Length: 201
Length: 189
Picture 1 (tube, each protein chain N blue to C red):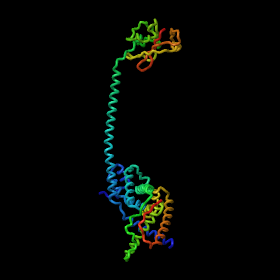
Picture 2: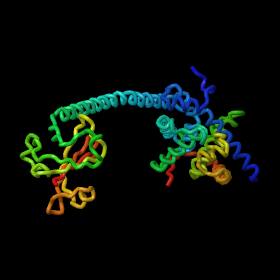
Picture 3: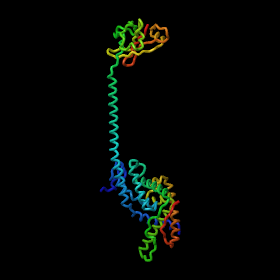
Picture 4: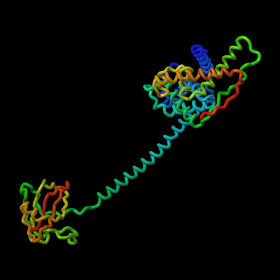
């Protein structure tokens, strides 16, 4: 099996456009995770994220010959495509559910040592997910891209089709909103968490 | 809580979420589904050329039949005997004939088969007719056509021919070569 890291995206895309199945499989294996995580964080649903991954790579399969490496890297192109699919999905469904939180009991009776820290950490993660999902879409995408997926501002701007300055300002505002949400969340930390289903109008 | 500590808490929470998300992987069945889509798409792409080949073959056969048919028809038309033009009373000895040479011919020209049914030639029933030769000489064996026309008498006068006609319009026979260029003119005097 070929190690995908040895072959550039441009080369893989050229071969994909020529109908090379192995090249397309290599592209998928190299990039599926970022698309899936981005979609999962944006929609809050594993199932929807899976659908979006399929749509994104199906689009790549159909339009491999149209991909122009001079315009953007393949990752940026895939982020842009995923964002388009996510927006379409959100517009269509107007409904998304929270991630499948298996453990809503955040404070078990017997926790000691590092386990306490671990639980605290899990609670933080859960709260953060909820807070991010509650953000407006334009703020959510910059937080997911820049803070969670370590995408550079320039690449994020390219994927979001906006200026770098816009990315910076949205990120600043998104962090403010997140901080407020987390503070509110911690203020009512004693209230037991409930599985949520949220409708976005 | 100060702004600084809030920022730190946010950064920490974001980092924790990023770490948690880094462990998330796309389920394997998604790859299976995508590769199945790839295979289906390329299977279709392979069968499509076969269909296209069949259509192209049928079109080529149809075009061939059309071409052969039209060539055969053209040959058939070419093989049909064309009545040779009535031989004009003209000498092809260009050295002997001037550029514009009225040649006196008898009205008793040998009529072409079926010529009696046609409108009589301008010089056929007259006692005298003039043949004006113009343009390039007629090559030996060249098929010429005689086209009957009605021209203004003044036009003939410009050629130096005084047509013996009471009307303004005069019937003339124009001798047309294979190249479509007029070679001679016969007019009754």
